Length: 247
Length: 136
Image (cartoon, rainbow over the protein chains, first blue to last red):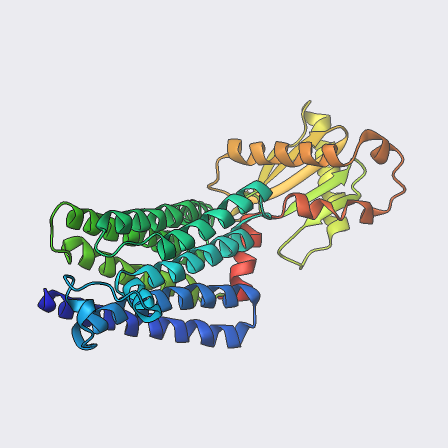
């Protein structure tokens, strides 16, 4: 199990590095453009990066912290504030909170870039869903209860799908409607990015369900999820950063 | 309005009430006058007047409703039916916003129609412009 944790940690280190490079590119773009949408994009990817960081940190804690109740699940929970936080880091709950924040900012971003304004009812529903998801992942927790983990992953997957399916549709419609080669490539890249963003939590969800069914974790779907993150980042790069247009 | 690019709304006499253009190298009132004259000439030849014409890679589509002429251009490859659907949508929006009374008592002040932009602002070109401003 420790070997799998180590492989996972190495894999996530690589993802963090790629995501960090992408985040720096967005920041540079923001300093160039000084536009609100660029800032939103930066905040989205910053939230995702922090989420990935906490996932990575969970493996570091299990492997190197030396805190016995973390790596030895038979030991009782000391029920201290520190253990409360550590357990939530280890079971990705802190990561989910930052993912929820990132997805919620993605909703604002989507409305601002593709939409005509907020639909009041939808805005309330999505805000409540974001709060519920963050609250559930943080507070509905029982050590070793994988079913709660599955629910948390499911909530994140649904949230991602709610936001990124319309994003995919809008990007694909724009791709189909424009004749300009640069814009076409960019919109197609964004459509691909949206699909991979949805596939990431779906793969994690399947991985968790396999654990629920008796698996050890770190299944093929765990690694697929992180590969999808890379694909999504490549899509985002060709959608947001790479295109240069003549105004 | 993801298909239409530039849009003009003009009176039968060619006065441009509203326009949304991404190419600024053209005089709108001149364009309006030319389109109105062209359509009026076409109406002399056939009952319904001019429905569309093509210039390079763009197709200009015309729709006349309640004595108001709606003109929009789009990429040639876009189906005419789709273009017409959006034009009808725009025309309906226009008459929803500006009643017959407003149009009958209109005092030639085109600023009255400036708010129309908000009703049709989610166009492909608007989206592209946002992406250009923020990223590209």
